[in-house]
Image (cartoon, rainbow, N blue to C red; front, side, top):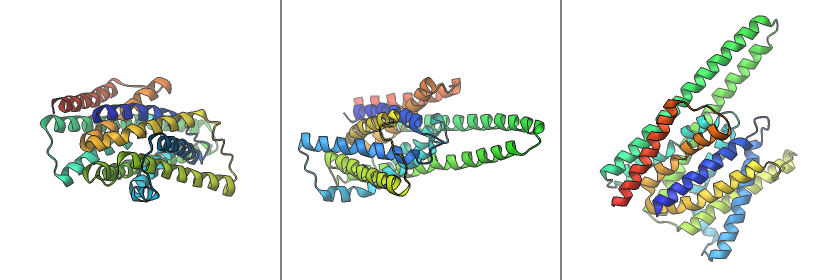
Length: 319
């Protein structure tokens, strides 16, 4: 069942990415924090309902025990929200989600697991596809920036003042800063997933249900702290339910998190690269709904990753 859980997680998080991007307002410097508040609220509600309906044996110590994992996940997500204010989703998502294959490699090296030939091929294929897509997106971004720079130069020639030069400088700084965010996300998320695999699969330090509830309540506490900070100290209008895209993003994020826990606990080494491939879904959705262009090479990269997922599915079926 871990394979099905991983695929469902992939789909939910791809949709969540789309709504994250829609809700990321570049003009609002606190947009990423407001998104964090919404995600925390939805996760807190879900954790409470799940706890009451299923009678989970959960104690406060579980929240503390799982805190290292929660910290890396929450930190990576908030950094990811901020990066989406500046970068296109189709660029940020593939870079961020290279962390899955990295996590699998770390687990393989540290725990000395035995992987079948198909498992190794599947992981390599997914890694190649995601990396190739990241390279394509980076190249595309460079070409777009070069074209914009050329246009700015032409306009500067017609203008006696330096306003175009100033605009170009600001844009360069924003682009340089934005590229840091998906890279940081990749590192932090990879560390979080690695720890999660240890907690849920390798050493079984905590059960799936307590881990899920611990993470969601931690995010709820984080969101509450953000709410107090923005409302009392920054005098910001939160408008939690005014931006519907943030609500939808939080719902799909929470649904994905629910299935993610069971996927990781079932087979962390192979589930990681599959789940990380949700960036492919993010790219497709961003092209369809955000009207971003998709080249033939990008379709090829997507096909490569999907092929890797199929290979892992076949490997699991033969096991």
